[in-house]
Length: 279
Image (cartoon, rainbow, N blue to C red):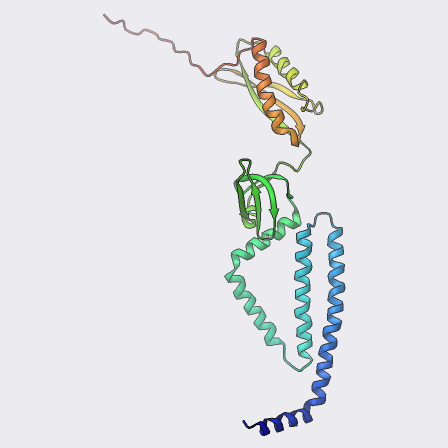
């Protein structure tokens, strides 16, 4: 096409449609300006509401506001485009089909994203808690919308997809202020049960990290094959759990030995009846 012909066509189009085009352009600019102000206000209000909710984490606050802002901008642009007389229905339909295709292709990723949102919304644990999830126990070091990072007691770093965590049981050992230390101690059938219980109770009372309230429990729980088994239950602050557990194990053994209360090992009595004598 010759430059002169192109110029004539452009001039003719502007002469016929220039006023409508300028009007539509002004409408588009106004829609963008008003939309930007409205989106800014809506996002600020939404962030303020989420921030006041104690159960909503910072990650979820930022993610929600970010997604909300992007969705609102898409709507504003569609409204703005329609001011030029463009039919936006095919665009919306195309976005729907494209979203379906992307959702099918990235269903695993979207599953982790949805699970991450549920974890952040329900907050079954937080950074610093010791949890057991997806068959792994450790301290939560980091959380995001896709995965959770744990550090195991032997100092291994494990990254677990959120879908695996949300799809199973979650045990949070740090959620409560106190924990119960459960132990089983076996004493001999010939031992004085009352004396054994008293010795163990004294050990617990003298442990500086064991709580006095609730009171400890030491009672017979089972008549075992080789011993009378006592259940030992003591309460402590969650942070002192392993300190109490290890110290009670040692101190109970030493106190029972000092009081001549036997802790028997598995044994079997064999009786022979009427065995033939060898010549």
